[in-house]
Length: 375
Image 1: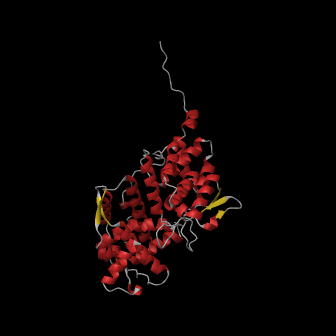
Image 2: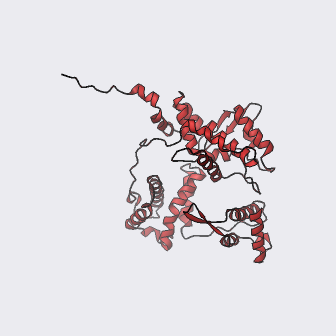
Image 3: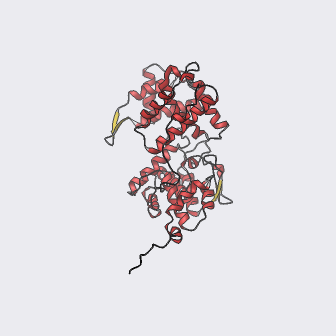
């Protein structure tokens, strides 16, 4: 509430008293006035409460229709970027979140082209310019991120040539990043350490009850954070003691039994901690206007639990829990197909990586070490 009050006072000071006149640049101007803090001696950021509150206020006003939506700017490259991203969803069947990843991967390239990204000039794009951009932009990136950049760039160039927007096929100009299937082990915490996450939560608070229920669902079912935030009250079937997990990445919905521990945690949260709102989403932010929880907030909750538990692991997000869950399920003798169904994988290849960490099963196929004869 303090941040929203600060934002309201700022708007009054600059003469904006009609919510229909509120725009995004008013939010940015307000954030620019907030004090900055040094985070872990690494980077600076503005006051969190004021920044979040300003964004929440304008989003809430737009959701109820009090403030008009911000007009989308017409950019020199919108004509081809919008057509390409639309084709990704319609013809390739990519999920909206994946389409957004592709858009963010190619948009900096089109921005770098500037006026040459228009319909009249894009046709003259050269291989040298594409290659120079990829080399410069990919240099500081990690291998996986470079691989993603190559994938989206090649996809865009292939599309642009097929539609006649490029004079030459430039797809192969983008150098491939050497990555081999199943060349790495899943990097996650040990299952014995995962249970420690639950001990870091203070369940006497409303935030704690919500966070405990979230962590317990992630640990019990190994779901993605996107599935967690998409859970709705209608997905709970108390009579049948089942929970319907939303589909993720064009996968399938999965119906799982509600364990006694998960049921108790959900009841404690829904009855005593969940804000009163018309939203049907199960997990909400604890600050007005009580929006459905964002996926980034799930990462913050999980990573903070890892930090407090002092668990040594290279990754501290919900996917680390998912890795530990799958590894444990395989070690318990579950079939790969069963694990793939529970994880929502469309292909067994996505699940096969966990077979490499099942040491017990691997020992059964190991050949005996040759022993040299002693003469």
